[in-house]
Length: 161
Image (cartoon, rainbow, N blue to C red; front, top):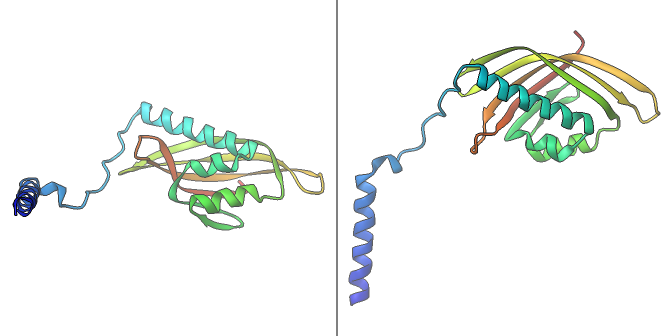
């Protein structure tokens, strides 16, 4: 009988606490806007250069880790969504990237995201040994991860200038 009384007391206390803190029962709101300024832009640029270096070394796991869990990579060959799919796509590329340079031309802020646009230049060795150069434009949409790291929510690369 004492155990039942204790159980009832615990349940009543839990229900009371939940009623006293209604925000715990509400769904989370939208993420806060990204603060404007040079510090944010330096962080995003540093993240882009890290990503570019991983593309240059074809670090499939590293590239995939730069994306949000539901991140999207849109390229000429089609759209890829999710870290596993992105990792597999990079790992299975038949060409070997020799160099990759990404240069920012603009950044804009859109609530919880930073949109970065610019150009890329890449050289790669094809399976037949031929070295080719590619260039084009990119647009990266960056979001903050739960630990403050920058994740790519969407990366679009288009060949040509």
